[in-house]
Each structure stands twice: as C-alpha cells, then as structure tokens.
Amino acid sequence: MPAIFSTNLAAADHVGSTENSFVTVTGSATTHTKGAWTELIPATSADGYWLSIATRDDTGSSSSVSSILLDIGIGAAGLETVLVPDIPIGHSQISMQTMPGFTIPVFVPSGSRISARLQGNVASDTAVMFCEVRSVAGAAPTDWPGITNDWEHLGIDAAVSSGTVLGTSWTEIVASTAAAYQQIIAMPHAGTDGTLGNNHIIDVGSGAAAAEVRQYGFEMRTTGSEETETLFPPPAFFAMYWRPWEATSGTRLVGRSDTSTNPARISFLVVQ
Image (cartoon, rainbow, N blue to C red; front, side, top):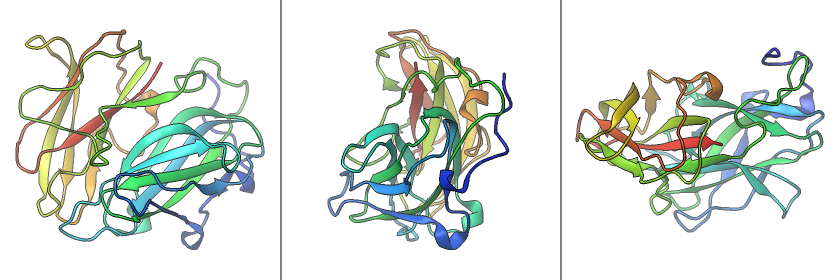
C-alpha cells in the first residue's frame, strides 16, 4: 500500500487554512430540502485519493435540534454530482478546534471543482467547513474502497434530516442491502430531543430478525447544546481503518442502543 498522504499538497487543493477562511454553506429556506451548491475548491491541482472535511453547524442553539445532512459534490457549476452523500452534522457553535472531522478514500480527478450543499431541520441553516483533497505518495491506489466505486448512505430519514431512531432491542435500519458492500461505517446523528443529553452505548449488526449478529459497538454522547461525540469509532478517522465490516447483497442491517432516553439515531455510509 502506498503512503497515505503526499507531502506536496498544493494550496489549490484545500479551503479553510485559517479560521477566517472557512467556507459557509447555507441550506434551503425550506426545511429538509437540499440548498444550492457552494464552491469549496475551484479546481484541484492533481489526482486526489483522500477527501477530508471538518464542519460544524453555525446556526445551532442550545436545547434545539438542528440536524443537518451535508453533500460533497464534484463538477462544474450547474453540473454537480454527489461524491459523498448525507454526511451528518448539526452541532452547536463550539470552537473550531473541536469541529468534527471526517476523512475517507475517494477518487477526485485533477482539475475537479469541489462543492457542498446541505439540508437541515432549521430553515436556511448554515454550516462552516474546511475541505481538502489529498494525493498519495507513490503508485496510485486501485483497490481501496471508495476509489473505484461510489459511496452511498443507507438509513437516512430525509424528512427529518437525520438517521434512523434506535430502540433498545435490535432496530432494522436496512431491510435488505441492494448490493454487496466492501465497507460499512456506522454514522452517529444527534439525538431526537435537543433539550436532553445522554450517553449511549450503540451496537451495530446484521442478520435476520431474532438472529442478529453484533458486529461492533461504540459509545456516543449527546448534550443539550447539540454536541455529539463518539469514543469509538472516532469521528476523525479513516474509513478504511474502521473496524472491517463487509456485507453480501440481501443483508439486513440493524442497530440498538442501551437507553431509550433521547433516542440515538444512526445511518450507514457504505461502498461497493
């Protein structure tokens, strides 16, 4: 495997080198509807194989739910297509240093324009974000998940701009996967009640009803200030190094929480 990152990242391949240059993305005036695309990177200087973002809700307030789903897109203005769909954010106005980070392998050809759009539970919600595309040192990777296939997002409830609510018993998130997936990543969302905070122990698994098999678990903390934190898997981690989990076509995907107070929501970011 080649080295993860190159050392010759060009200035053209990132936005947000300082706090003052972070880009603001604004949602639609209609709740739960994707807004217009906002340009992040006009044109990348080389082929890229990693996409990194850090973002936070810039409109959030204490004791409210301002869940957001963020798309990263590629393409000329007016011709954008989704590169990574429905990344869950929606956090209160906390410091830049604690903005949730996210890095996954994805192929971005040289000269690509990168943009973002969002939808949220709050009309005209805004998010501030950092984004960069990175190349690799050595030979280009050809077999990493996300390099040769597109990322998809399962278990999203677009009507509330969030994931699927978990119960304390196994909750079905996907009845039957439409394809075989090389990588499945559990994505935590904010709780259902912004006035409450809670610690959640989340299990994710697969299998038929009454025959579910736990794949892994992690702890998630939500607060009345809309902050969402995970202890494992950490939010700023490389998708290909998260706990391996593959699924054949037709797999039922499930999740559960250890508490029903301010129920947690999750979804699954997947790639074939």
